[in-house]
Length: 480
Image 1 (cartoon, helix red, strand yellow):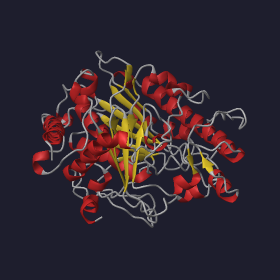
Image 2 (cartoon, helix red, strand yellow):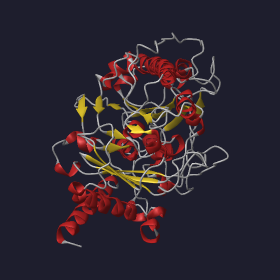
Image 3 (tube, rainbow, N blue to C red):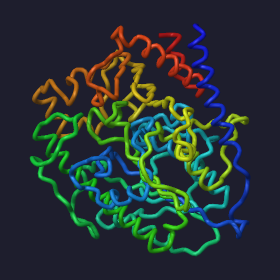
């Protein structure tokens, strides 16, 4: 190993260890016993299968007027990514601050997959509950077991019009917001929109929702999709579900304001993974992992604006703990977090320590979908390691059955967005993309001699991160 490589590894590890030390320094206290401590409430909103389809992120369809307005009072993160574009696994990262290969929530919670988070994992609701918080959720949970995620109250279990009525879901949490208590609250608000329904995207008539329809032939398709009538029809339906999500989140924001909690509540809006189409959800391509993140903090010195720091969903738990002042898991006792508070970036955005790498880790979606990927991203390049590359990339059941994908298969359409259909189905072991010059990830540079140094450097970073986080799939470096 040359001296420069050794220095890079040491610098990377020093930054990680410094971060873990900072996270362990929060003073222990119990808010339920401290009446003088002003409440610091938290509302964490996680959309389901939403990509960058907000006007605040440049989408032209005007489907999200309420979220666009909210973005004006928040920090808009432009380089935020989930670590795995799969529902259960991604939500476990949000709620534990751990990559799913460390928490054990490798894929879907529901049967027949039945993946579980390790019993010893200290989740966000558990940590806040132990700190005197009332912890409540509404909508989708999709992780297990309950002992690791011990919410006190569940709202919105039966909604008029069915589970896709995000407006009704917002109304269901009104009692929590109106309750007078010395204890602060944490609300985990998870609409199912704009996830697919049994048929389409759940766009039937429902109480409290004003449907906004889109003409399939007047919309703009994202670059990752094929321009076909089937794709246009589905994307138009998807945008209607995005608008329904926007109406429900708007209603929740109104309730937060009406009850006076806009003055004492941290509000975070994000999504679990990208749109439910091949080439996005369940992949590590940008359409699947680059997502909206909006954070509004009630502190007077908090300034809205844009932040281009590299962040992932592993940063959400430490961010919330830094706001509430709750004691973080202790790395000296083996409780290592894989992220850090985004407020460190916001306090000092010019700090060079914050310009580094982020890491993504995916193993399963449904039980039949074994296709582990490990990815490293810096300010310019992305390197994807497809660990099971000899296999055909599997398709989630809802993506496989979609009109868009069935049309591609039935008509044997050879091109799917920026790559061929065959390239989407059969991926190489390594994929290297220049995200600045090639944001659609159409040209794989992994075998280009001009990028050998970049390729080698990112491989080193990726392997060291797997070692640091005790990735069970680290053994593939040795045996394969």
